[in-house]
Image 1 (cartoon, one colour):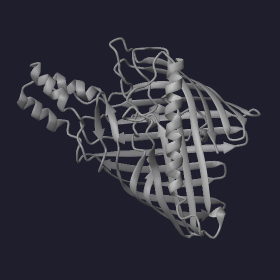
Image 2 (cartoon, one colour):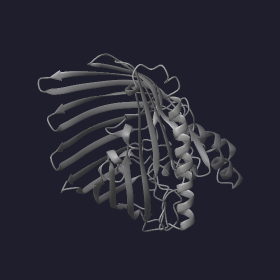
Image 3 (spheres, rainbow, N blue to C red):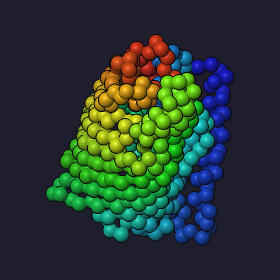
Length: 409
């Protein structure tokens, strides 16, 4: 990463931090007159990261929200993030929470955005109700995937989490916790409306108005936490393929009638995608283990249904925790049509690869961790989801090298 790149990234992060502080300060309006100063709390988190790969034939991104990624030069945008969270305990059973983050996003900026803004009401120790802007919990650990310090590796394994571009919903959820002997059973149901955009080349696919509903069951069994979850989303907008179809008509690859038929064939609006997952986390003494599996069925032909999973293990030795993992994803290609333009558009959603993960986390100080990681991605040449800027020479193989400093305060 060049000196100019580093300067630009840190200046953008600094601007984001100032704006985040301003957003968090809104929570403190009316602080005068509060009965107890301890009712207010301000916390923060962040990651300063540098990432590079072994090839210039495709760009590696952390998730679908990023329009560009890292290639064979060091890049500080992929993993760097700053966040602030403010909470206000209004009464013993009522709390307001605001969280804002600054990270590299769909419009190629670090513009801060409010990721959480909700009111939480706990009428009993067993029942918790929330309303407002909430983090999505499609999969285990999904709601905290921006907080690098909370993860053992540099980032959540992409093969498993890439299909989750949804970071928050405007809605409600309800959780119930029930003791089961010495164990604990917890369930949650949620509903909300998504907003945001996913970058696709020089266009944006809007998620605004897409309705989500889901829930999960957790079972805490000693050092094990087990979860089964289900969620679905009904998309409210089509993918931005009008330009591709218009270009195909101008090039003579299809007629205007065929373009209209293709638009209907690949429609995403009012289609529903379903997300199923099971997971287990073990944390006891020096050992940490994570096992996750998911299945996603897509209602639109423009997407491919998929199955994915990962296994991650770490062993703490003093302040250092070496870890190793393996993840995979297999998407189900759609049957070929008689139109090559439609087939090319559908092929953009194909993913078929494995990733080997090796790394180490060093908790160098209280609330500060340094990480170094290698990801060995081995896939088919047709596996292009969700890489960016794939070139003709893309083979499906890539080594990713990452260095990060995670912190919380």
